[in-house]
Image (cartoon, rainbow, N blue to C red):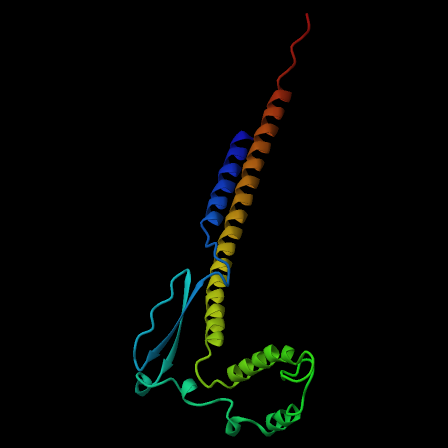
Length: 194
């Protein structure tokens, strides 16, 4: 019984050390390196604690001003008719949340207007969208982590199954030994009292 307890303790301690060696980084904790590479330039490889996202541009654009800075996304030619009509609705707006100098609280809408403008520019930006590239890289990395975790879990299940079989075999041997000792003890005649 002491041997079984000792073996079980050793096994549990070894599995705890395996779990301790696992990568402790959580998704979202890694460093993100965003690069723009041109032509056939090589993208650096990601490391375990770093995600490298490369956006590939034409070789002809290497020394040019980026396309997102060349054009004005808010120019009237780039706006839909619906946006133009909505712009006319706000021409005479005044008061709270209007971003106008007239009326009480007119200044309160200026921050919202700037936020809306920034989101509009971001939505119309034809350039590189690092957010999507980072999300794709995270999904790829998580798939690798999930596959590795599945492999480790499979090994642990096989190990536990083997351990359960060994323990059952040892218990059966011990039970057989005890039964043999009992049967041998029962076959000897008892001494006569004097």
